Length: 156
Ligand SMILES: [Zn+2]
Ligand SMILES: [Zn+2]
Image 1: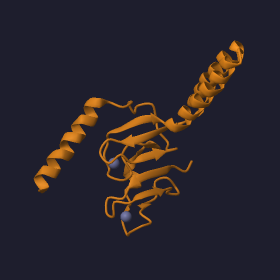
Image 2 (image 1 turned 60 degrees about the horizontal axis):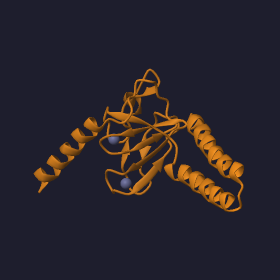
Image 3 (image 1 turned 180 degrees about the horizontal axis):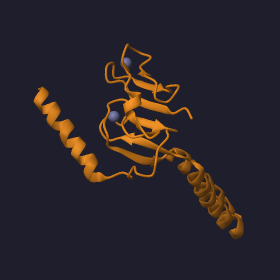
Image 4 (image 1 turned 135 degrees about the vertical axis):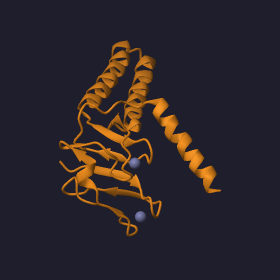
């Protein structure tokens, strides 16, 4: 399974998408010479356990479901529903909203998870992962945000 990594290159700061093949091969930036070849250490027992870009071990699990898509489905259903109400078709009005909820639910169920790095926000799509990765945790995120702030202050 080839994973996609969406990240900001640490060297040239551009947005990059990389699909190392095999998954533990080196990650490369197509915009500059940056490369990171620690894939073997990034995986343990076949599962991704570190960020492929910065090596950070804190990753959170997120549904690989574009929020914009969910919004479009709901907005479409709401429009149909309004029109149906206007034409005195309550079954169609309620039905379209229910259908939208159902489509959202089905998509959500079938979409895989992706792992997001707390430190550099790199997104690892379609990566082998196990159930150990926790969901988003505000405290951990805050810890990394503070670290980043301190680093910036020290740099000035
Ligand atoms: Zn680069
Ligand atoms: Zn990272």
